[in-house]
Structures are given as structure tokens and as C-alpha cells.
Amino acid sequence: MATTVALFGGSFNPPHVAHALVALYVLETAPVDVVWFAPTYVHAFGKELAPYDDRVAMCELAAAPLGARARVSRIEADVFAARGENRTLFTLELLATTHPDHAFRLLVGADILHEAAKWHRWDEVCRRAPPIVIGRGGVEPPDGASATELSMPAVSSTEVRRRLGAGEDASGLVSRSVLGYIDRRGLYR
Image (cartoon, helix red, strand yellow):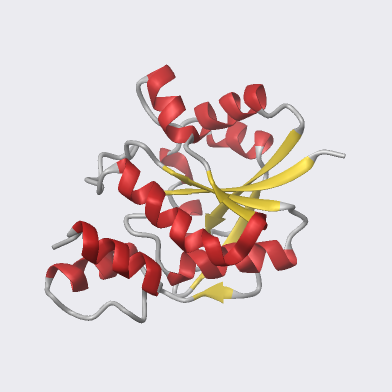
């Protein structure tokens, strides 16, 4: 029987508590065996990001409490090395080659559905990895689309970075282990 992976891509700049909640929720309610956090190597829409290795390390810290059912994949670095850009479809194509015994589901927030037209060959992405759409506080899915009944809190990495940059407390938005890493590395200051 194939292992079903919920592929959870994103900037994770930094990963926050809602990311961990989403992963736990999907592991407990969706027909998946494992969640793979897959930090993007270079953002497809040109967003400035903390160094990739730091974001991978923070994802590993955020995923650790979930145990063996969550891991971090560096697939996006491999895709960038091979293709010179990151697109979800390219990631899924490489995963089909490197993990032919796995089935993939794409884990996305309802907000992403509003941007689907910007994605490279969104229909093919959905065919290869049918999305699991997580409700997001304050965001309604587009007409005809559905999301999970549970909406995750409206926590954002943007707000975490803003607070850290302003010297404000972000402890309620980021796990202690990730916050400690950010502090040690001097990120987002």
C-alpha cells in the first residue's frame, strides 16, 4: 500500500504555531500517513526570505513535537538546482520520480485558492496532488470550492516578522524552540 503524504509547502518565514496546528489537524483528520514540510528554496513570486537552511532548521523544530508523522523535506532545493526555479508542479514531478511508491496530497490554506490562477499549471498540480484545503480565519474559499470545517487561526509569518523587527513579543505566535532559534541566529531583527 502506498504511503500518502500531505505535502505542506510554503515560505515558513518563520514557521508559526498555526503551521504546526494545521499539520496536526491534517494528520488526525485526513487520509494521510505523514506530513512533509517543504520550505520553498526561492519564492516563486519574488518574496525576500530568511536563508533556506535557517527556514529548514526552524521547520524541523516546529515539526519535532509531531513525531515520526511529520518531517521536513529539502525537495525544493533539489528542484531549484535542477530547474532554476521553484514551481509546485516541478516539485511534484521530481517527487513522482524519487518516491514512486508514495501518493501526494497538497496541503494549502483557503487563501491560496484565490491565487490559483497565478500558479504554474494549477490544474495539473491538483491532478497530481489533490489539495487538502484548510479553512483560514477571515478567508472564504472561492465559489465552488470547499475547505475543512475547522479554520486555523489568523496567524501569519508577516505579523511574526513585524513584531520581531519592532522588538515586540511574538511568543504566542511561534513555538519556544523556533523563537529560541530566531533569537540565537539574530533573524528578523
